[in-house]
Length: 129
Length: 129
Image (tube, rainbow over all chains, first blue to last red; front, top):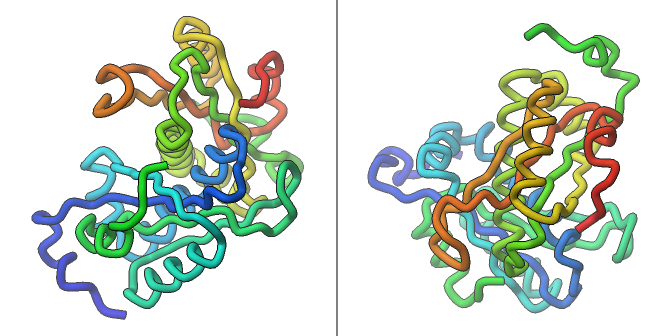
């Protein structure tokens, strides 16, 4: 895959990361925070290796993040697939399942760090967690 | 600072990251998850630059994380200082304060990724969030 056009003009872009969490699992807040942190680190690592200039821009701008909720696994997987189809780095998290939920349960995923406008196109219907 | 002895025998160590969150702020769960993710990424970046072999071990082991709670800012800052005094990489997060709390409020900090046994010595009295 080539370098997307917006990255060539990255100084003009606002870079953020969105983390989309299933609300139907009703995770406890510590558990949930751990899953979101997994997704955030996984997304950062992916972008750092594929598009380091995007990761750097995100760092410079204070690593803006939003945490959004989605109603169930089916909707989450559909949006995850849309992000991948659009070519935006996305990282899906499966819980190790030691506590609260079954091993391997898909809990959340991250989109980016990436161009905030492109993320908004995918996530505009989701509410803040 | 030299390389700590345990890193020379890193194959024998279990590496984890702890994130310690103030419970007195009573942050909403999305806000809280975002702060924890900040701390996790900041800690990972710090260790990746200072002790890359530790960051790699953490990745190989599935990036184990625990989220713990602490009762107030004073206790948090005291524990943060203890971690630094011990030479363990620790990253303090101040919220940008756009929502819920005042700008610059210290919300949480990460310890590691680092030797789990050394982290446990510092955090053994804290409960899971």
